[in-house]
Amino acid sequence: MRNEILVLAEHRQGNLRDISLEMLAQATRLAGSLGGEVVTLLLGSSVGHLAATLTRHSDKVLYSDDARFEHFSSDAYRRVLADVILARKPALVMIAHSAQGADLAPALAVEIELPLTTDVISIAHDEGTLKATRQMFQGKVNADYSLATDRTQLITVREGSFMIAPRTEPGLIEDIVVPVTPDNGYKKFVEYLEAQTGAVDITKSAILVSVGRGIKEQKNLAIIEELAAALNADICGSRVAIDAGWLPQDRQVGITGKVVKPKVYIAIGISGSFQHLAGMSGAKTIVAINKDPNAPIFSVADFAIVDDLFKVVPKLTQKIKSIREQS
Amino acid sequence: MNIFVCIKSVPNVSGAEIKITAGGRAVELGGLPLEINDADNCAVEQAILLKETCGGSVCTVTIGAKEQDVMIRMALARGCDRALRVEYPEMGPGTSPLAIARILATAIRGQEFDLVLTGAMASDDGHMAVGVALAQELGVPYAAIARQVSVENGKARVVRELEGGVGELVELSLPAVLTIQTGINKPRYAQILGIRAAQKKELNVRGAADIGIGVDTLAELNGGATLDKLYRSQVVCKAEFLEGDLDAQAEALAGKIIRAGGL
Image (cartoon, rainbow over all chains, first blue to last red; front, top):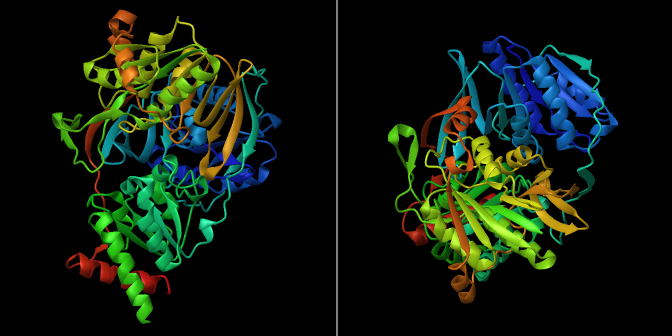
């Protein structure tokens, strides 16, 4: 058992995802009190430039440059991670709580019998134990966990939870050769399907009117369309609005949709899951209209009205029209 | 095509104040309506759609108490053929997703299946882990967060939802486990005839011990990472709430939007 922290670098189509550096920053903070090294595992094909970036965030980068890792493969990744973890016995393994991580970490935990704590938003080392916090009930409840340090702990880490912090002293790259275990061929990567684009590119909109669960039915979009027209704004929505078919997929804002940074973002009937906030908190001015005063959307909003959107929106539209007509 | 679909009902917490009880180890759910988990609802629909195109039967699997039966009967009314419910009263918010996967695997193992579907995530514990752990327990291939599924010639073609609206098309040999994401389909409602028929369908209830689950095994799976306490998360509010009656609030907000938007 070592005090090492092993972080799996996540990348796609040649680009490192921010979560990799976020995990490494937190691993570096933890390593200070655990007294071990921060080791990154990078599996890829011709991604030496990513290895170089990662050295500025870790003590050591284990890099396997192998055509088998050209695309993420949960099976290939799992076999390598299992070998590396069993050989190095790190105190903690960090994997992103992402589409890749969700396709990998739980199976890895079962295969080599590691405890698994998912979607971690905070982790600290406190008097000999690791303390992790995650959320339940759609972000309404926090749950604190103690992770025993007598065995390797596996956690998946929520995107955007930690600040990226490069080091002053770069680490080393260690090329590793992964034994060739034949692929059983049960699961094959076929291709990436790029995001759909529609008539309007909401990442370019100056003003966005965004709707969520609170709008209840598609026919209620009429009042939203009137507000958007009064502002020359485009309409987008949260996952709920897209899943329900009220808006096309290219209008989705959030981690699995688009990241938008308009001048004004007006969130109507959106409670504000972390996935949604990650897609819009960079807007210059955020307005929220929601009847639940405890909705997380208010944590990022600049201006807000707590009331029934069906009362607020028509009145707001009318006020905007009359102010714009006067000027 | 034999399909198992793992489902549970969860409290609808939207707009609700959640009470924490038992010294921070449990949440008080009294009064909150139980509804089928959104992603599980889509998994049920996907199972029925696949049955309609490929034939076969669908069995639901649930871990939980009798209060889950309303949801189970509704899934049967929509077109599932039979149901299995495993009682495991020790389960709580601190139960590891690995333990949940172990129970489900034990319940399913030994029965023939082509596909096991789960929701991609449950809205209560939010692990996004049970389906993939279940696949590994069963020793079959899997794909997490499916937003499109088709089955042809003994293979499943699955589009996985990645970040940024990108999809990843993978091909899996069967049997396999898929975790189903919301938005993949529009779940149907039960019809009156279906609701009547559902009352006659098999709902098999077993204790965890009856299917060979030892309390020790699960304690071991939970052991390494222990829930200390639950507490309500605090929304740190930075918003300026506009004042006055609704008319005054709307007027003030209109002015702020117009200025911020440079209109």
